[in-house]
Image 1 (cartoon, rainbow, N blue to C red):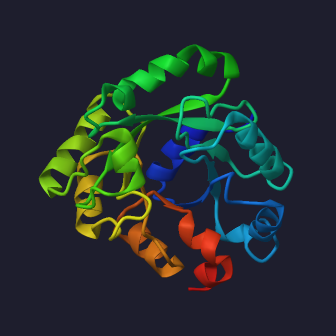
Image 2: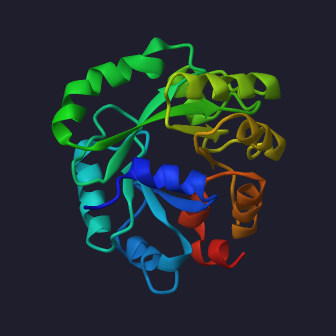
Length: 238
């Protein structure tokens, strides 16, 4: 029997292991790009694949997941940008709740809309607190989700602790695609000191040296997308 993603997360935290996840946007990745990612040269450099995007439709998602599954046995997890981004070919789905949104749709409404479809899909669900941090209010995710990024370290910590208390199984801290600056390492350090569930960080990470620094500070999962899309070879060799 294969190990579930939830079991993998528990193992990662218990054994202080680290994960590099590549975020694949089906609208930006073609077959040649996937071939390079899963080539002998690079396939050993990362552990998980997140798949999703803000404007991806169900057909694009399914084709991308099938293409990835043909190339790897690594865990493939949907990082949905919309309730329609559900496909049973993935191994799991991050059930996102944007805790600092001012729109109830992004806190719980979209989860309600997709609940029956998710149940029928058979996908493993990972209840995830998605927390937008920093001071950049102009990122796409901030605009779409009516979220005000949290810049106060104390408030970020309170939000992470609340996520654990509400039963979330993962906290995802990010400053949003196109943000001016990556996550403050001190914020990550404080969160890891206070909560027991795994913490993922993403956005603004442009080199393997930056990935390793976030790992050193305490991130369990580092998620990289744009930097690998633009120059995969430079990223993994940095």
